[in-house]
Amino acid sequence: DKDVRKSIDLQELLLDPDRDFAYRYGIARGYVDSLAKPVGSLGTLEDWAARIAALQRTIKPKAAGIACLIFAADHGVAKDKKNGGMNCSAYPQQVTKKVLEGLDQGIAGASVLAENNDVTLRVIDVGVAAGESENS
Image (cartoon, rainbow, N blue to C red):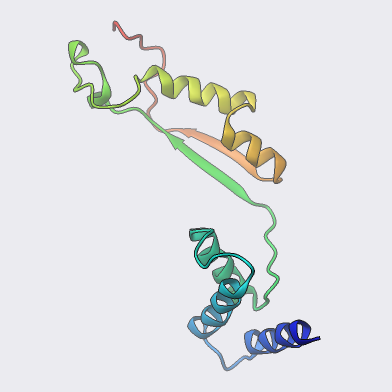
């Protein structure tokens, strides 16, 4: 079969010890671009797929022990003007806390995606204005 032969040829190129990362990346990216989808339609996922394929030297790379880190914080400038901020955010700071609660409860989009794809999700509080009310 022509597709099987192409896969074997690509695999041989990726395994060639004389080829550097840039070359292997080009081969892998060409393969990703040749799949039945519009070129670039998966955004940076296509780039990451090609990078991992080049690093692992295979057109069928595997990823295990995946983790997603979400760093969360509020900025004082987002406070309401009457509280010393600039009211420059589309959402009040209380929304940050609600989003984090949703992540903790497993009902936010990121937590649902993580759970369904065996991804460890960690939320790191790097400055959430917890406990502040709109009037404080």
